[in-house]
Amino acid sequence: MTINLDNLNEEQKKKIINLNNLQQSFEFITNQKIQTESILRETDLAIEQLEKIDSADTVYKAIGGILVKSEKNKLLDEKKSLKVTLDMRLKTLKQKEDRAKSQIEILRKSLQIDFQNRKS
Image (tube, rainbow, N blue to C red; front, side, top):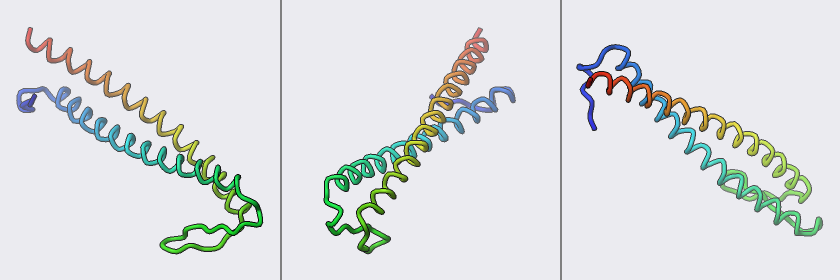
């Protein structure tokens, strides 16, 4: 459905523009959340694997395009720290996503009422 903005009052135009902006923000937040969940899954898997191996085993970590020898405990601590950071980031993104969803729904309902009143 296309809407001719010329036929709307200023408040309705602002609501539609705001709705479009909120939808774009929601999409961006959702993509960030998906990426964070993916990195978190990889981090969980790395922690799980590092906990299975012996401390004497050689481990490597990727830095840019190369692998560098590292200590198991040091790498495990880094991954656990990253997991905490990712968990917090994910929680924040979920809150932002919920807030954006709520704002979109409120704005949609407001616009529906505006358009229904226009038809009457």
